[in-house]
Amino acid sequence: MGKRLYIEDLKKHIGEKVELKGWVYNKRGSKKIKFLILRDGTGLLQCVYFQGECEEESFGLFEELAQESSVTVVGTVREEPRSPGGVELSAETLKIIAPAVDYPITPKEHGTDFLMANRHLWLRSKRQHAALRVRAELAAAIRDFFDGRGFTLTDAPIFTPSACEGTSTLFETKYFDEKAYLSQSGQLYMEATAAAFGKVYCFGPTFRAEKSKTRRHLIEFWMVEPEVAFADLYDNMELAEEFVEYIVQRTLKNRAEELKTLERDTTKLELIKAPFPRLHYREAVDIIKKENPEFVNGNDFGGGDETIISSKFEKPVFVHHFPTAIKAFYMKQDEKEPEYTMSCDLLATEGYGEIIGGGQREESVEVLEKKISEHKLSKSDFEWYLDVRRYGTFPHAGFGLGLERTVAWVCGLKHVRESIPFPRLYGRNYP
Ligand code: 4AD
Ligand code: MG
Image (cartoon, rainbow, N blue to C red; front, side, top):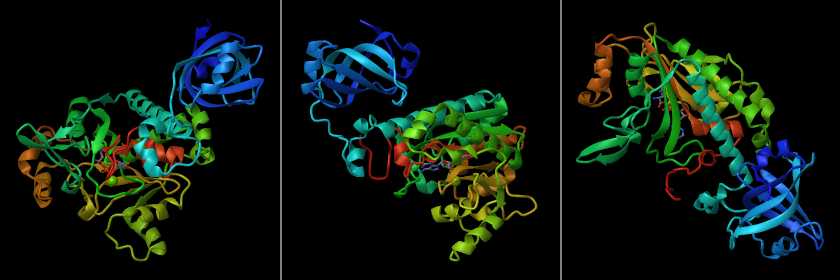
């Protein structure tokens, strides 16, 4: 028996006899030599069985060995510069822990519907595995960035009595005898905790009942939302660009192998360094109109419009000062041009579109009361939110970054559905 190890750690154990547990990713071979590609969650390993050198019974097992059977392998680690992990195993024994009969996902092409219905198994495939390792790294980087800068994690509730991002995408549910909604954003709660802790963030799932099937929309997605007391729109953009640079550069460094598996052109990501270009909404409209003359000044951007803007830059680009008429009730209007808000979106490169939305918040209780009624929201639901202004109101700003769109961008995925383990999509709530 060797020492039980994981594939990703084998480089430090060259020449040692080790034991590995995992699943059969693939097998091939001839009469005299058999190859087993073992998958253990941390990587892939080629295990070589030579007839005469390995245990006879193990060699015989290859006949019945099927893809995704779980196995135990014992052998000696050898350096192999041509293999992805830099090592190979001179295998001695093979034990089948449990068989897998007719595993449905084979190396041949499968349609998206089939793969989505088998998402629980599809996760074992190389590209899916790589994308979700990138997701985990981005999530860790997100936490480290804020934890390392004096932010306090103050998570927001998921059951809420009211809307944050407009009533059209609210997910209604029951809260015993009352009506409740699944949170669209933790922002309003972060504004309250910012008054208690100064610099705060929340990071968790949020929900939007969006009846649209685009490559950028999920029904359930993860959002990180920092909020900073006494910060304005410009402080907010500075924080956002420093943050995006950090999480992208760290992932490039720590997940190089996975990005290679995904065939991501990482030279494009190496350019993601602050500062990022900034455009006033008016300037962005000028750019859009040259290529999309139908665009109506004052409207929100469509996916195509965002792509027009981002194609002009090698770095993500901020668009700030969106029109007041199309923005949420909490957005602060610019005192110099009240038809525009102190808002900002960050558009990712390569056509990935908006990954951040945020801005400076309205701090006046009178203005907010007026806005709440203009937006036809119920004032009684927002009394607590107004209290944040009644007792020592303060300028403050924050933003929300969508994790899945960021994962899709960093990985170069065509659709956000592959950037979360179990995507909730319009028309799909299984598995
Ligand atoms: O622009 P949004 O709606 O902003 C807010 O929710 C603010 N309250 C955040 C804040 O200021 N604290 O959403 C923020 C980000 C978007 O830029 C996008 O990345 C992501 O959340 N997002 C979605 N991601 C996937 N599927 C959806 N349906 C998404 N809706 C928003
Ligand atoms: Mg937005």
